[in-house]
Image (cartoon, rainbow, N blue to C red; front, side, top):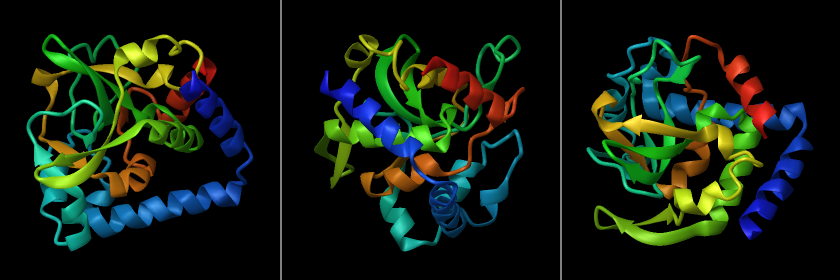
Length: 214
């Protein structure tokens, strides 16, 4: 499939990025975070339920245009939200502040791609590949984009590419905030933000496990 070829091609491309280039990309996202989230940008508190309300109260006009609050996520769009998993005690680790593209609704919840389970290099690679299936639509009466994606579309090759470690199930009654919808003009900055909130293990361990699955 063309999508698989795109992922492999882009993965090889980003493997050639220098340390300084990766650092530059990270710095750009951190600047975006500082500008749009203010003092909340550096929070490491496990209880992140206040992050979304604070985020949505930003006085930055450009940011207000790029984000909106909703109680229900749509397939193929990008969201941040706070989450407390049902089986937190038995999971080896989990992210309490996912950055997710929903790909399928399930009973009481959804499956989604959580970019945080990938290191920055692979996040960029996956996002670039997904852009090949971007479609135009409208959100809240305004032009926007979404990914024309589904679990059925991904499951045929999820065992052999970088999508596999990102597929997670989220139960709606364990979501602890509104869903913060990110408009397409901020996708690149959003997925690269260093705001993952892993519990029980650090991000290096999570990313090491993810790399072993690619």
